[in-house]
Every structure is written in C-alpha cells, then in structure tokens.
Image 1 (cartoon, rainbow, N blue to C red):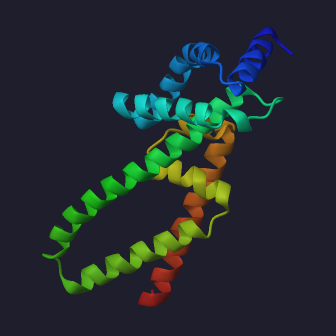
Image 2: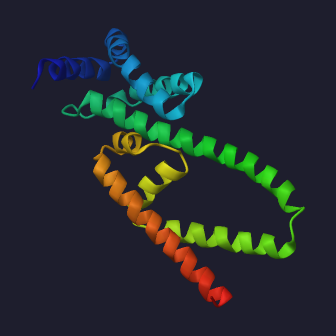
Length: 189
C-alpha cells in the first residue's frame, strides 16, 4: 500500500470514529481536485462548489458505512461523478423546458402537418436512442445532450477516448439509419 493510500486509510478509520480533524484534513487534501472535476463538467463555479460540498456531506453522513479496506479517494471521486451526473440531468431538464417553451411559441405559427411530422421525427429519435445498449447510450447522451468532447466523456466515464469515439460513431449511425428507415417507410420513398 502506497504512503498516500496508507494515510487515507488511517484518516478513513478516524473519520469512521467521528474525528472532525481527520475530516478537515481530507477536505483540504481533496477539495481542490474534486472542485476542478466538477467545474469542468458543470461549467459553473457555484454549481461546482455546491457539488463538492454535497460530496463531503455524504462522506460525513455515511462515514460509519464506509468499507475499512475501501479507497477513500475512490469513494470521493465516484460520489462526485454520480452527483455531477445528477446535477447535469436536473439542469438539463430546466434548459429543455426553457427551449420547449420557446419552441412551442414558434410551433404555434407552423403548419399543422409540419408540427405532426416534427413530433413523429422526435419520437423516432427518442426511441432509437433508447434501443442502444446502456454504455453506448450513455456515451451518446454525454456527447450530444451534454456537449462533452470525446476526451471529457472518456475521463468522465473512465474509458479510453477510442472507446468513446467508437461507441458514439456506432450510436450515431444506428440512430440516423433507424429514423431514416422509419420515415422512408411512412412516406413511401
């Protein structure tokens, strides 16, 4: 066990016993690293700070349940990753709601046939995304919905950039073909 891991293991044991000084040491050691990761994906200083704060609250609240042999760093970064994903998901809903309200105003001026066609297209797209295997769907959503680069998605999912590129390419082709085939069969072209 490396020196750093050994120190973390000792601090983890002390935290489990309720030692606030050890908690402060861990906070000082990992706060900046976790903040940088959160900021990279949330792109907001306030949201990143909130995310890190929440991660440390979870550490303190769940300290008695932590595994003795577990990795403190692993716990913190996994918790941060899950928390950031949840925050992105919640914020995405707010943004989508705003976009949908603007879209609905525009749609009210569109021809009824165009509105129906667009609605069908969006439904086919959502269905195609759902039919992808979970990992491929996750890569596709991070790249498309969240706007992450290949490198950012790879770091976030802890996989290689090559894997992200491959999964995104396969998902994109499938979705395009899925939608085109169904549109063509409906229109008879």
